[in-house]
Image (spheres, rainbow, N blue to C red):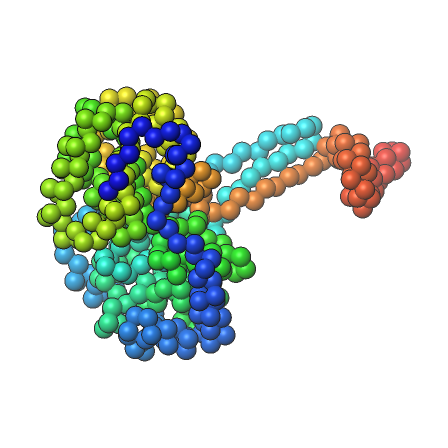
Length: 433
């Protein structure tokens, strides 16, 4: 872990660098998979599942009997936790419903918006080293609240061709309509193009490895929209001298255990905080079951001491973290100054884990600096907004000269004429009276 004290502003950009791979370098690799799935459908999916996930699948979809079996296998304690988290996620996302209103922009001119759910959405849930049933909730719950007609979920099976029971249980209670036993870039292809077993969708959501990310970006150019560009998970902690070192260490490690390419930053104005935090990290790391992964992630994590709060805010807005934890006495003030972050965790008793699981906010967030321009997944991610306008005869008479003047100056005569024929019709009608 790197410790940097009082860096000059000209050196900040280098300190915001993430351990990421340019996924465009993988486009040629994933294109072969995408093209095969598009042309061969389920045949290609089975072939790639055997090649990449080492499983020979007869059925690519999960059927009701498997879901009922999963209900019996999930411990009651976990069921209760999933249902409680689901309730909180529902409450937060339901509050985001759009209520459009009609606006008269000019006499006789009425305009309004209407929120319409995306009919078919695809959710990708990675397999990897842990069953991410929480991601199922974060994606499926707002999709259902938005009113998406078809919610397709793909996740890789294990060597026996099974999906983890907790993922199936979460998918069932959250309202997923179709579950595919497919992982990797082939899953993205299946949802983008459609196969005999996996329906085509219009927008794809969810995290994944570099191949999944590359596949999502490629299909977004042609076939399906995606939630956002994705990269390794990250956290920034802002702390003052009154912060608890063991809290900071726990937040550092909870982020680092996601994967070897995760990153954690600590920003502080108090250099006396550095040693206690490092000691707490080392102590807590020793007892973690995923300590090898976590230790690897710490290699490209940093503790940075800056001279004042203004520098800390400026550095934060430059870095644009996925998760921002503020453990300072003035956390409310600092939070108001931050412009670029995926999700902000305010105060000493607000760990990132709360947002990851159960507070109600969404944990699918922009990484790799994309918080400069992207929001995390929310209810709007699953809807589109259509605009409407209704113009009366008096309204077109009021707007007519404005429209015709602008159209003439853009040399679009047909646009001008579309108004002129209506005005001439009105003049004739009024003249006949």
